[in-house]
Length: 284
Ligand code: ZN
View (tube, rainbow, N blue to C red):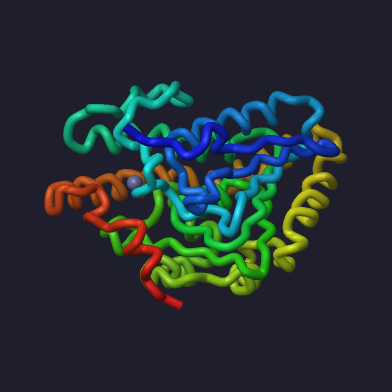
């Protein structure tokens, strides 16, 4: 059984038309377990249902925005029954072979991220420190990304034999040439480079991150609600017509072929790679 270090893995506050949603597992770099992801879904639902909220800031408590999916904290709950469903995929717990990981990731990773991206109200990610693998997914589903100058981005999952995170938006977030480099080399990308590539909207000193994200979100929140919701959908539609959704559907299955290959050859869906292997890799 998972041993949770907190009952509040997500923080929620509202201020001047903005809902500030905070990933709140700072002890573990805001690693994403099921407990956090369902609480995050609740927070997105709450913000989108509240007429007093016009925009969302998604932030991370502590030193890092998110170290990715939880692959090894005491709160890792990947084998356990989830509290509810946000998609119509059944619960994953105890399913045989490749099915458990497949239905779990349809719900928790691909399903939830798509649901948040499709939410009517714009979200601004406020990213500091590490934004690794599953952390990228949370930043990428937001409409704007504000980074502090100490932020860095990385998708190291090819070291696990897996072709990128479940939300395969790499070549939409950056030029395909750069996306290949990002994934093949798995190097850390600085906030400065991410800004130069257009993946990040603004880079600010760490001390100004919260205020800048709030100010940007407040400007959006002050605009006419219907127009903003339509504008967001227009951009989502354009990206999907350019292949974003179809690419993600296809690559999700390659991702799960890779998980199955790992299970067959090593007995571990991620090839026995640990959080320490990832964190300990100096790839600067
Ligand atoms: Zn996966």
